[in-house]
Length: 140
Image (tube, rainbow, N blue to C red; front, top):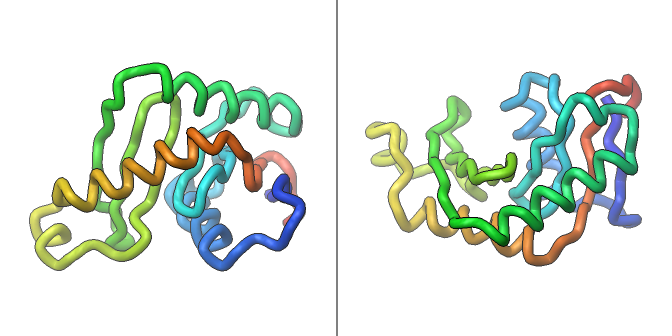
């Protein structure tokens, strides 16, 4: 597994935590681009080991999201964080574990969901790739 640091700076604690979240969610078997503190773009396995194609795919997906209706789905994950899934493989994890009520009902409340969705939109509008997790390579 390889993480390409595209930002050219040390990754923040939050960025590293987000990479760990999504590695866990994807069982260390998917390529993804970190585009915001809590936001990733799922990438095609077909582009594994090709950094330029992975970067282009991430940018294409974020651009497409901004030009379509903003549908999203929410999930309560087994690590007690919330997950927002948007079109074009854009995902965001909640900054904090969900409330006891959200965990008990298995549903994110609307305020939490909209807050996390806004993280997706802000990251897509920024149009920057921070890092790419390439599952095909073995070094980290």
